[in-house]
Image (cartoon, rainbow, N blue to C red; front, top):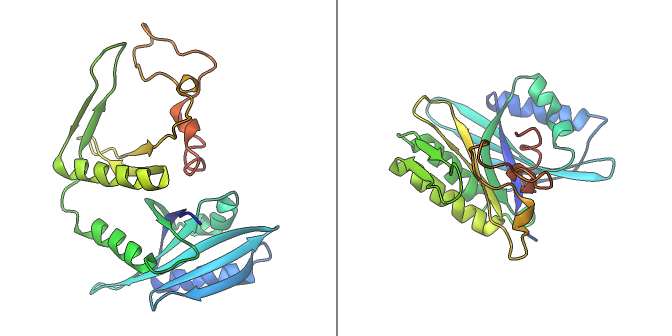
Length: 227
């Protein structure tokens, strides 16, 4: 079995996590099928609704300040229904993704700890300015600091292993954006995707081509409303 894409939600400490689990267990919409304690701080849950299953991982992180709780929720067709009550409680969906094996937990806790260790120890923002081609044969430019390049390198490695990834970058004005990366297979039909040129006075894409966001499968929920 391949790895599954999970997206993080930040809850309000241990009480926020308990409240979420209580609501899910009492919900008529979802049935708790199975719970697996991976460690003292990580538990896997499997729920079902109308014959469709969805996995989640509850993760507690404790430091000198207190306890932070996170839910990593599988990106599938019932994701939005599953997290609807979280959004009502102002829980925050984060631009943090991780690929986890739902059947093999040997690396689960290590992956989650590494993920938040990286988030907490980064002391420099990922500054990256991307400048696409204006027309045929035009140059493209990436101007980035070292931290951003290392972040992109890691995201590329994730995409090479799992086909898709994203990483959050910043222009100098601090307006964050997500950089999505797709690793295509050998049979990819390049004639179906828009050309990357940005000068509409020179280049006009064929009506039969699609925007790049349409070619992401694992991130299709997140990119559903993308330009």
